[in-house]
Image 1 (cartoon, rainbow, N blue to C red):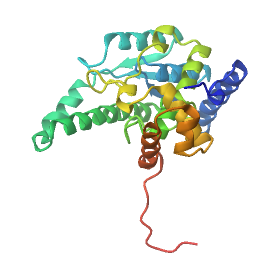
Image 2: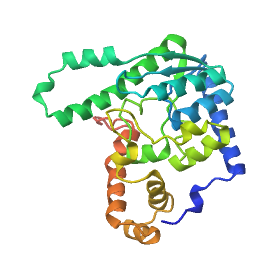
Image 3: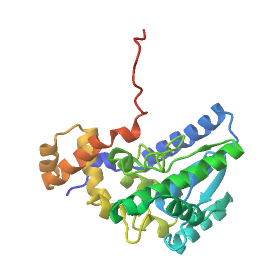
Length: 272
């Protein structure tokens, strides 16, 4: 699969994107008369980039590290803590295990298949972290920053009202491969940039394993389908990839539009 020029950002473009994102964070905080921002950091590259950009925006930042003991890797917690410490950012570590235990004990899981339980609990973990983000935001008059990238948003690879439940998505217009470029540009540690992307929702889970393709492959396919508005068959031919892979991603985009749109309101009256 060949490289696509439209996905490669040079230093001038990276500088422009960094400036625009930082200004958008700063302006949004000012417009809502908020004290600052809060965001969850996982020790992964997406949240590390958002943390760097929020810090660069000059706003007050509170980072939440929300591990699940026994599931979240210790090195991820350590990396998240070290990043916050290096930037002089206030952070809190909140283990989500007691909340998950309460959910498991309260819900009649035996009525559902084990696989459904695993997926539902994975989504619940993302929603628990969203609740904690907004608890901190409400208590301290802050905006919640999301850490989703454009690849995830287009493919619906996020939990509705979980990691997708935020006030703004600073890196939501950057594909994953572009986030990695931005990470190098803003000085995210190499140990974080090189990690295998995972949401850490269950043992052995990885983003690329769950989505069925590498981020590099997905980003090039999405660039053709979305940015160039190329058909599925032409995209497959241009990139020399299996048309079934392109079709699957195209169908995923269509099926997950509801995740990025406001809930529909049932109209009862004609309004001018």
